[in-house]
Length: 371
Image 1 (cartoon, rainbow, N blue to C red):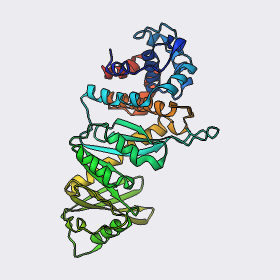
Image 2: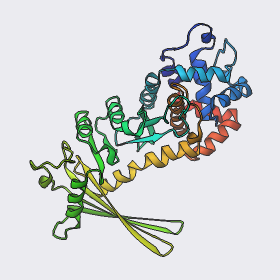
Image 3: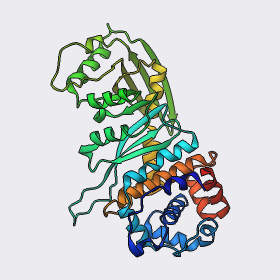
């Protein structure tokens, strides 16, 4: 049996009575395979099953026949999303891949998952993303943007962080989050912005003062589509002045603070030049080259996960709104994307999905990556 199916087989079935006439594993297998092949909704899953029945009967028994779109919808509304999300860890363990390296933490709102009639706001999900392997390694529902901090801490407590560098935006520049990361054997790198005004002003002033010399510098250049971006990275390992007994009202006590970092980004486009400076705090005493790599790696969660889900899987327009449906269906999409990442690295995700939908032989080659 395919390894991903083995982990899915351990899920508790929330259905009762006649609703169990379709095997849980059969329904989940069809949904995941259909998502890999381009399906985007429960109606798509049912249509795909009918059109590709011969393919599914090669490895499924289907004693209850083919499930309808109502069957898919009902199952994903009832399925425990916490248990379902645990499939990420099982799948990556079978692949021999983990979160070692940069683990990026970020939240994303399922924009069409709101339900005005029920007074329910759009679902906000926090994801852990292994930047080096470009794999999702876990997710936790935050409910809304305001609870992303606590959801991220719950997520960090569930995954193996040993030896990793956890990165997050300014929202996660919190003492409790930093302490949790250190306690789990990892280091942290957080953006520092004006939500910590006193610290932000002091770090900005330190890098602006010509009398202060950084410990290391590194410069990178990108040029595409008439846009040139020069990024100058500076790091300082002298953080003693930030570890005094003084306390500002907004100051986060960050365990293990070992580095200050700045990225000065100068962009030239259409003859116009602008410069932006971004500041970072970290528990890892990175040199400037490693700091630059970690900052760039963090943005892969936007470019290689969120963007792909929105553009390739049309997630922003997904209309499922009831119960656990939105959360479980985003798990299906991320599992599908993990599978696609493991197959045929020479072609894009978009082409792999299209070719899987067109050709049974190509679909088999993609599914075979999970053996």
